[in-house]
Length: 283
Ligand SMILES: [Zn+2]
Image (tube, rainbow, N blue to C red; front, side, top):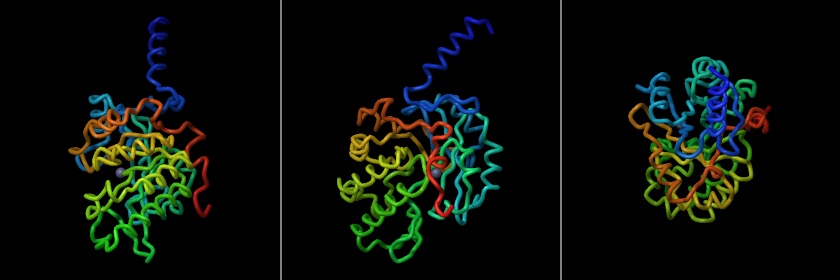
């Protein structure tokens, strides 16, 4: 490569990094903002890693390839995570860990977790005040919700507890409600509840996912989060190959809420990952 060509390639690489983006590292792709990144892509069903990388190139959208792990999951210890890292690291994608359930902080070690570019979780698995462990997307776990207001207060309290105590970089499937409450999303997410969520995220430096599959959070929620200084990330949480699109909902919210590059989360720099800044509970 000639010196001039090399210089122009370096200049191009420089502008590919948005202001505030994590420093470039040899084993990581550039960290685009807005709808140019989907930080929540699962390799499952017909979507192999190679196929995901091909679709990322074709769409011009950088992916974060994610492995789930937690209690009762196939991956529930460091060895499962290490196997995934061996397969996925060093490719043209970020590599992320999705922590499932609240037990994860006792199942994995920092030494393995910090090999991921970032770690995230949602507030979809927790135990209610009666000790009933629920996965909110499974109706039989949740059962009939007799009092939606009490349920919402519990959900907000659990989410705030997660943000304060778990070392996560990003909150995903943000603001998800069980099916039986989803139609009342705008009424149940009162300004006070929204404020408690976004203040908890801001206080712990946790980004908020704008999720394409569930089409959440609402634009109203995103506006309140933006006012509190929360940074956003587009993500899909695809169930397979057919529901991985091109950040359509995220792009819509970006337009509606006037989000700019400075409003976006990017994967943390080495040394600044949540698992490097905050202790794992019980360790
Ligand atoms: Zn997921």
